[in-house]
Length: 113
Image 1 (tube, rainbow, N blue to C red):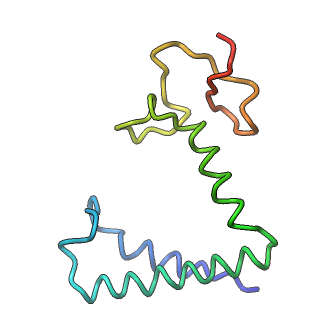
Image 2 (tube, rainbow, N blue to C red):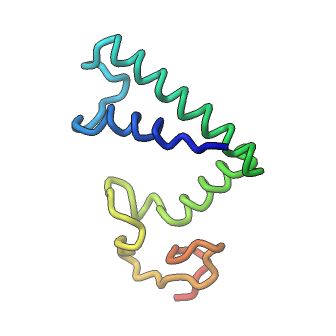
């Protein structure tokens, strides 16, 4: 299978020079929204096909990734911040956990202090 990274590039190009994108794209023309929908659909279709070729079950992979992100980016540490998880500081001096569920550098409430 030929990986169509060009579609991802086309998606990136749409947002390249735009600032923060408001929910619902209220300042976008209908033609722009329609084009975005077409490009997003292309990316989705290629992604689904690629996962099929690679033998990845997205139905299982996506929820697992959400769980891992919940460990990495705890709400109490991340809310209102765009910092990478390695840059976050716990106010309660929680130490980095060695049993991090396979996610390097994550914090876990079961860690020893």
